[in-house]
Structure formats: structure tokens, C-alpha cells
Amino acid sequence: MFLHHLNPSIKALTIGLIVILLALIFDPVTPFILLLFTISLTFIGGRVDVKKYLLYFIPFSILAFGMLWTTIVFADTPKNPEDIISVLGMEYPRESLLTAIALSLRVLSVASLSLLFIFTTNIVDFILSLIQQLKLPPKIAYGVLAGYRFLPMMKDELAVIHAAHRIRGVNQVLTLKERLKQYKRYSIPLLASAIRKAERTAIAMESKGFTGDKSRTFYRRFTITSKDWLFIIIMLAAFTTAVYTSIKLGYFNWYNGEI
Amino acid sequence: MSNWRFKEIVVLTALSVVFAVVYLAFLPVGKILVGLFGPIGYDLIFGIWFIVSIIAAYILRKPGAAFLSETIAAMVEVLIGNAVGPMLIVSGMIQGLGAEAAFAATRWKNYSVWVLMAAGAGSGITSFAYGYFMSGYAALSTGYVVAMFAARVISGALIAGLLGKALSDGLAKTGVLNSYALGKEYRRKNAS
Image (cartoon, rainbow over all chains, first blue to last red; front, side, top):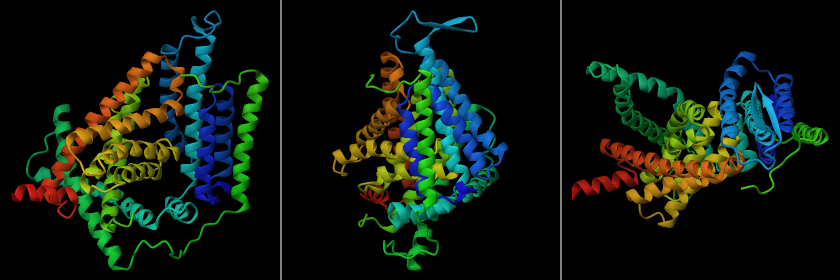
């Protein structure tokens, strides 16, 4: 349950750092090891529902597969065209194939890192920690929290607009063209009501004394503890181990100014 | 930030929240297109992901509106708990910067169709530069990368620029924007 108690800002920054480091790597072994590591860490260090996790993970797999075949098809001319691997009776240049696998594993690896964050972080905590640790102006942060509250309301609002249109007999959606028209009909009322709600919320907050002043006090304080440092060290160690293994196996390859 | 009314900030975030949902709804569309056409699939409809910058800047007409709205939309996308994770906030910021640059070039004075289209294209340029680095487009052949770039910039100008303007104008007509820059301009025009 260790992941749930980390400082949300530090967690986000650490993951961001690892993603940037991953972007520099062009070999398949490093992202693969990191992928396995991140998934295990998510389930060992956090309370995560396997079914929900898979539901989120599947779209990324499709994306990764798209990345895989397009990178092979549209790859740069390889440096050693003679060096060929044959898979399922088709022959590919070794270099293109490895890069393609590397890029799609990278997609999955970044996805697993993101899911680690999403599944173990409370939204309100994240925003409060952004104010406290990363000095996000409270005016914006509370604006976001207020705006975020509109999210469930939007669904109700959509139902209201839908009902209003039906009463006036304009809701016979059968074809794709009509469906597009329907979206057009919904967009303006939906936005208008969102703006009205925002305006009322802002006035209510100001009338109750919200000034957006930076020197405010907090009921819930977030601090950076040794646990957070441990998390940074674990993640960096995992990355280094992955790179080291990749070098040992002779696959290591990183971005060196190719355009 | 001091010349922003709090009302404007909350309206900006409300717009960002609405479009964050729209952005998420378009991700599977993008994924299907990617499955069909390869990475260029995203670029064809990439403009949709810049639209809140253009709408917020056009309605509020304040320095920073384009950048902030896109950043907040990205934050909300992360908060809803989908998409590409915390790194999405960085790509949102980069897209917002591209649009902001176009408005900054006119010193936040001109909001004509051309400037809005340039802002959409600007987001396309910065986001492509970022994507080039982060998604490893370097591994793709040059011709394909150029085609992706062109598709994204055009999509930014058309979808974000033109559609964004049309939506904002539609909103101005309803009168909800009467206390914001676009609504004020709309009323002035109608009065004269």
C-alpha cells in the first residue's frame, strides 16, 4: 500500500523523469524489463483491481500494435540491409524490426508507468500537493477543482438537453449524418450551461471570501518524506538495471541525433 | 495572473473540463485511425486536441488563456484517469505554448480568423516537435514524417482554428458571454 501514501507531486515528477529517460532509448530490452518491473510494482505496492487495470491497459496494446507494424512498414532504410530476421515466413531487416519492437514496448512501458500513477493517486490530493509542493497558484488550483466538480454534472446536463430536444420532437437520430448534426445541436447548450455554472461558482466562492491568496493555510498538509526518496531511488535503480542488462545482452541502443 | 478576474479563471477551467472529456472521447477515434493508417492517423484529427486553446483565447482575450486552458484540459484528462498519464500535462503545455505564441505575436490584440488558424497551426508545430522527440519519429522515413507534420499543421489550422471560432461565435449569440471580451465585442457589433 506503499504507493498510495507517496507524495503525489513527487510521484508524478519521478514518473515523468523515467518517461523522458525512456524516450532516449531505442532498444527493446530496456523498456521490456521496465514494463515488467512497473507492472509488478503496481500490484505489489498498491491496491489495484486487476480487471480494471486490464481494461485500461488493452487500448494501449492496440496502440502499441499499430506502432509496431507501421514502424516496420515506414522505417528508415536500415544501415545493414543484409542483416535479416525471418518471422512467420516473412523477412525483415534486423534493425527495423528491433526498433519497431522497441517503440511499441516503449508505448506499453509508458502506459504502465502512467497507470501506476493513476491507480494509486487521489485527485484532490494531487491538486493540493501541486499547490503545496510545486507552488501552483491557488487561484488556478481551486479553479480546477471547482471545474472538475462539473464533470458529473455534465452527464445530467446532457440528459436535460436530450429531454428538452425530445419534447420538441427533434431527436430522431438514425443515420450517421443526423448523429453528427445531433452533436452540433448539443454542443452550444452544453457549453453555455457549463459557462453559466462556472460563473455562479466563481461568484459564490468569492462571496465566501476566497481570494486566491498564496499565503493560505491548509487543513491537509502534504510533505516529502523518506518514502518519497525511496520511491525515486527504486525507480532510478530499476531503470539503471534495465539499461545495464540491455548493455550486457548487447542490444543497447539510444538516440544519438538521428533525424 | 493579477489582471484575471476569478470568474474568468473558473470559466476557463469549465471550458477545459468540457473539452478534456471531448479530447478523451477522440482518443479511441485516433487509435482506430492509427490502426488503419499508421502514426499519421492521429495527425489527421490532431486539431481537435488544440481546440480549447483557441476557444479560451478567443473568448477571454487575455495573455495566457491559450496556454492555461490547454494545460488544465490535459490535467483534467489525467485526473479523469485515462489517456497517457502525467506526461500528458507536459504535452498539453507544449501545445498551449504553440497557440499562445501566435496570439503573443499580435500582442494579444488581434483575434481574426487568420490569427486563430495560425494559433491552431502553431500548436501543431510545437506538439509535433515534442512528439518527434518523445514518440521516436526519428525511426520513421523522412517522407512519412514530413507528411505527418503537414497533416497535423493543416488539421490544427482547420479543426482547431475554424471549428473553435464557429463554436465560440455560436456561444456569443446565446448571451452567456456578455461579461467576457468576445461577448462584449459581439454586443458592440450588434448595437451599431
